[in-house]
Length: 128
Image 1 (cartoon, rainbow, N blue to C red):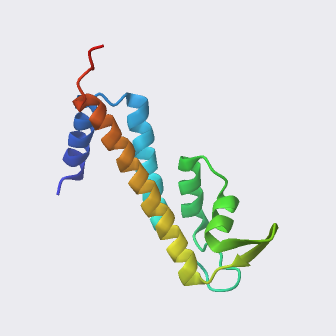
Image 2 (cartoon, rainbow, N blue to C red):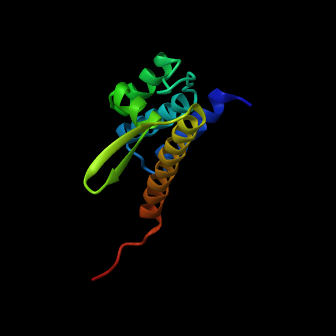
């Protein structure tokens, strides 16, 4: 595989379907953030903590979110019972499951957006 050629083909395809340069940049940043997110590793213990903070920080920089907030969001669950919140730490496997679910959701919505952009090109203008 030629990664450079594949990337150039991808950019050319996005240009062909009229994706603006700023939107292309955001799309690539999101894909890279998902890749970083998938590389986040967890330490044992309770609460479970991220072992490679640099990877988490890179992901959060691309997404524009606070690393501490993402780490807590992935490593804890909040239970609400009769208007009272209880925050419970997750085990290492559950933290990995949370990370993977978020990565899949981000990737999914990335494709939903891309297909919506494609559909805009395919829909003929309606005559009034």
